[in-house]
Length: 581
Image 1 (tube, helix red, strand yellow):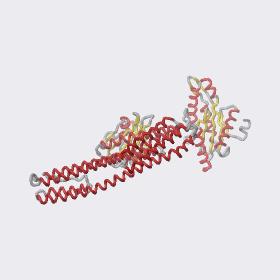
Image 2 (cartoon, one colour; image 1 turned 120 degrees about the vertical axis):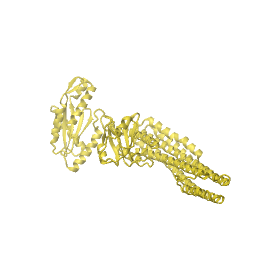
Image 3 (cartoon, one colour; image 1 turned 180 degrees about the vertical axis):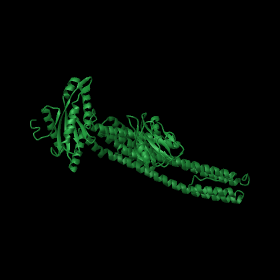
Image 4 (cartoon, rainbow, N blue to C red; image 1 turned 30 degrees about the horizontal axis):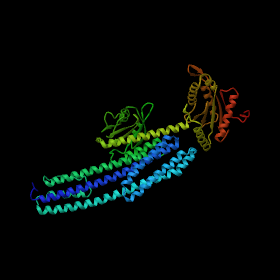
């Protein structure tokens, strides 16, 4: 024993200082935890506000009361949260939270007025929301953002004051301890010098500091306790930073989903966000694959930093092939520390690396796979896997939403039976094709196709048989066209075709003849052989019209001229067409 009786007083003084420092650290930790909880409550308020705004937009788009109810519920949840915050707030913030509660109530009142007014049109409803409801929501959003900024500034100021106080406290404590020990005994000066060096590193903020050789005495025990305290504080700081970073990354993913991005661009943004998370120790490269609903294969939709060979060979990955395919089949995270036998896609001189292959699952169905590259022999981390699980859950919701948006967009512009473009999309394509033809001075042909004897099929065999005939006819028309041509169903048994980039206007006749010959072939329907024909009217730009409606009228008149002359044929528009109509 070096400090038994002689240094009892000195040892007691040092222990007291350490305990005081630990108590202050614990007290400061409680303050920081309280501040962090305050920020979390604000984040929850912002999330509830964003959720209510999303439901509000869905209500405007669909006019379903379900979305109105969810909007009200989302905003109503804010009221008890704001009141709780008002109860915890100081005197300077009470008025702010009182204002926030009034804004929420004002939002609910204005939204309810808009919902109850059944006489509004879609445009009027949107205008009313933009004029009346949105400003209130924005004021709430700004209020929450200001509070978060103010609290973040307060937290930073508190941390700065605490760091200065601890630095001064530790330095003064070590000076006092050094003088005390120096006068009591010189036998433990070596241990104390080590302790002073370590304490200085801690005071400078280096909580990862270590002691190379801890003395085997009571001072050494003290130094071990201080070193452990530094590690615990550093661990707590790492956990706090990691949690905050995770929330920021997930928030960025959700915010990006609110932007009007295409699905491939959305996936690129999501991949960039994940690759830039600081505590996620991955290489700056990876990819996101979408699962093909037909054959289960994976199709690369977004990538970053991949080797060109991998970029090319992994554009389509078969189900169960390599690590990505295994993750899709197994529906769980697949980890590889290095290139092993499961890494079936490889090439010579491939650098050593590992993988996290993360399936993105929604309602038991794998939608996509996120593949991240790791340094060779990177150890699995529970923290990383937990964060990736949160990313997968968030991206599953984003993918479901994007697919729903694409489906709605498709239904709005395509025929339900044949999946052909409808009249709306056809008119947009025609306008674009005419603009291009005008610019390039190239001929363009428009064909209107009306099926002959189709009404007899419906009347004799029923509408189900008629639908089968329409589907078969659609396929036959498509087979007669180029990939650059467009066929649309305008309604009933009427189709339209745009032939762009024609070398000769007469080429349209060849296409029309192929369609007539193909459509007039018998079709097997419900055990019956059905034969229909095709009457085709052709109008050529610019000879028969320069505007879309002119061409449509010309082609329509030519088509009726075919019907009057026996049907099942084609005809270019002439000035005499349509005079008898």
